[in-house]
Image (cartoon, rainbow, N blue to C red; front, side):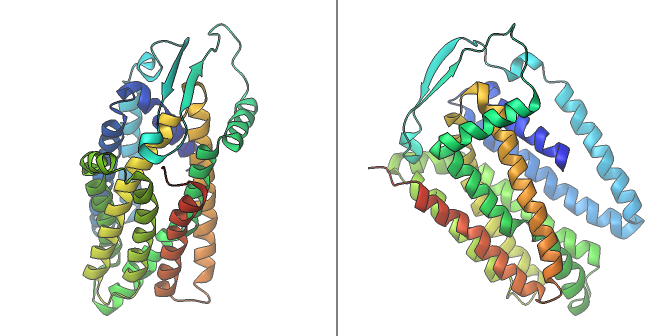
Length: 322
């Protein structure tokens, strides 16, 4: 996961250069819809492989999938991930989407200059994020979301692998895989309808409210899953919750990447992903420890509430466009 933060950051940062500014939403939706669809398929196959052949075989299959992924990334020409012209200035107006000021994108880096160290780039990313109100808002939102989202591994394992495995005689591996499959399918659906949703939002100027309320709603629905009596109902609420946040994330990530200059985009994306995964990991540990004092159902409700707070942060920090 530590190395994954660098990969995800680089992948997200290069997307605008592959798609162009106008095609960024469609590109983001395509990128993540295929990712989450494969996640759904992989979860189903992983559960089946673990149940049929054991965890060792499932781990080997999982490792092989990363090798295939690395090969496909290697096939992408390096030039395609960079802006075609490095000495230019372009103004991107994100106010029409989410109500933030225009942000000039300027890259005057000298190709012959020595590449700064990792720590230098990290400091520059932190400095930019601290001074850029919108970038800092997104970073805070993602970290807040991770405080609740980080517990999902523990929740699915305890709910699917223990509770419903006992009460409904599910195979533990299949039950956990079912919840992850519902998650992947929901996120895929959200990404697939993101472009059409964005057209409606743009025409009615609802982007600002949409981001905040969908974050809140997805958390509420996930909390409601905590009181569902069957695995099927659990999966349904997880599916709907993730479909909603999938649409939201496509809109949010598109606005975020459009607002960042190319020269700093990779550093901010890596910083964003690294901070989110750090909180995600700490939340997972806290969730595991909390099993000593609370039930998985209670943890589910708490997880949904914490994730929903990201929407509250959005409304607090980002004013509605006039």
